[in-house]
Image 1 (cartoon, rainbow, N blue to C red):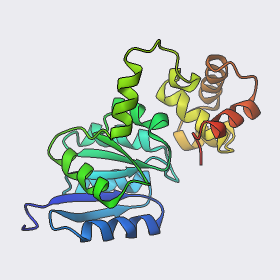
Image 2 (cartoon, rainbow, N blue to C red):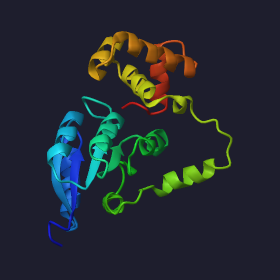
Image 3 (tube, rainbow, N blue to C red):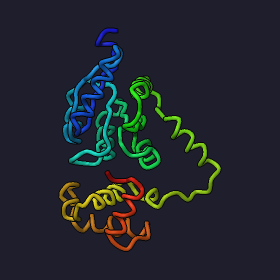
Image 4 (cartoon, rainbow, N blue to C red):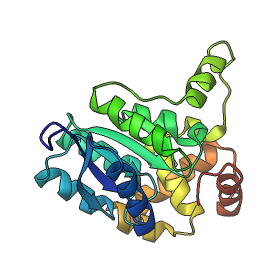
Length: 215
């Protein structure tokens, strides 16, 4: 297959060893080639503006910003590019939120090389990639009363605020990183605590760790 016909992939992950592993995987086939790589959300957004790529493999946990926010920005600027979210977190925690934000699929970092290539090919063809595990979970929930974990009721910004607090960041840190006022972030924090029936940051952090929402 010629390079012009191959699927052009942009890899976004802050861990060099992960990027090298992914490059080895796509190096084993001829229908997927590397278009570029990025370590941060900002680098990913810049890359989208000048690189020719068909699919982005995007880590959810980036050092400068949340992957869901990066996903939304990418879909706003380049809606035709398929984005596969890539994470160590279980699908139960992030997959549905990712799909709602515009992702074409969600891959756990424990996925096999075959699964990764299949997902890339599927979303490049304009399809959604849903793992067998997630499909089963969605099917099981069809006839279940809507209860779910408390964090699933949070908006994306509230969810992001919660995970950042649980990661040890202060309200001021979050405000600076997200270009928001301290007052606005404090309001998000208050909403999170209210919706999740928690009293303070320590309980919030305990909840996030218990539910594998932070690394």
